[in-house]
Length: 195
Image 1 (cartoon, rainbow, N blue to C red):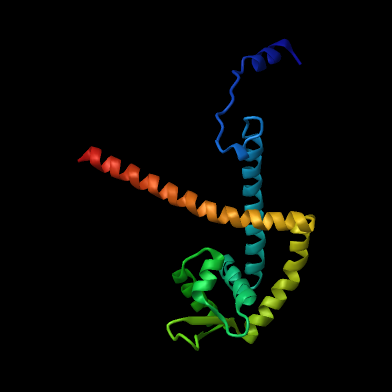
Image 2: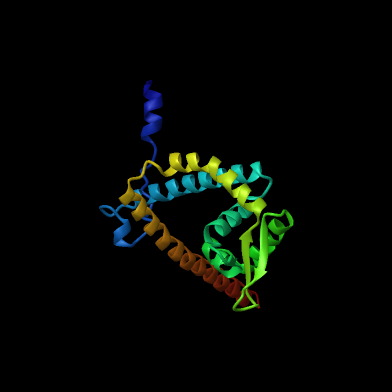
């Protein structure tokens, strides 16, 4: 390496970014480096899970969210079907979204809707024979992918991951509420200044 190249590198100013978290449980020796790595890993995992979902959905001619809806109904329907509200809560989306997407899946012949026997205001969804056949086919393809994706985890690691993810789903909802609240305050502040 020439001296001129070496001296160019020596002129780089040192910089240490401020910590992006303050909770002691998220810091290691005062550093958020492990936390930052976790966030970047979550971005990567999220993108890869979405890629798997879109791949299997596109193979059967439906969207990613419709794929998730079918899988949720298959998992939750039991003997009586599953309510739209229960599916919405399970998938962390609105009931209106489930109603819209389930209507499309009913048109394709994959789902059927029936009234709840105890409360006619509640609609229950279940797979049709065609829907069951489709889910069976999907699961045959996705099983080895899931085994590859998650199979490296020991039972206790998987249990801890599942528990941690459930906590993160709840705390992420609170974080989004905080962001929306901050945006509303900024909008009000701008409006007040312009008035």
